[in-house]
Image 1 (cartoon, helix red, strand yellow):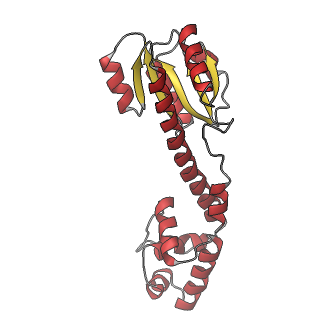
Image 2: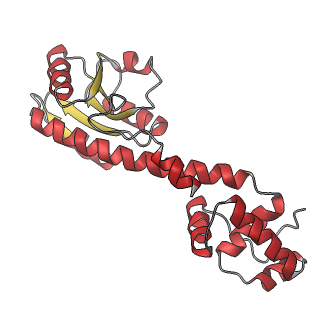
Image 3: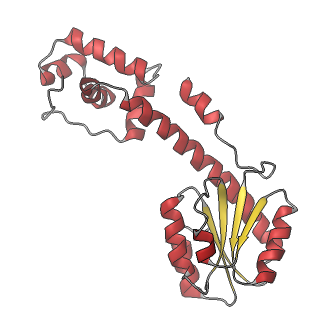
Length: 228
């Protein structure tokens, strides 16, 4: 199926892929340089920034798999930057490093999705292990995102009538009942249904149902608009 080809063509974020970038945002030169060298030795492509402001000047972070943040940056709170990153790049993993142990901040960071909260000096093996996990997590998230984007593009090609019929079919509603709700014949419903299956590249009803769930289509039985 086309979606499978599109998903396979997505860049796989692995250690051997030069596009699998790690970003370090830390005001301490020794910390960011030591982490950069450790990660580079494992095959990661690493970029470093001394402040949140410097990082935010480079918005093209589409290939980043993990951002390592200093908890208390001089120009912006690390937790605030975490929220900004997650809003822009939801697949990216975030790891914190702190000069001193900060239990309340670490709890909040982890609740907000941070994969690790380490105290300096950071054990390099812990950082490497966490980034490896981040790479796999990011790869899976981007595959899911790519599949969903593919579904949305195919869904956008449906006619208004087909968009009405799609969620009804995906909900398991019989053709005759859809016809009654829409005021059309069962044969016409079957034609629209076949068009939906073809345009969505669904090879079975089960596949179409899964697509409907992923697209979160509303079920509008009883108040179905009579689209042309």
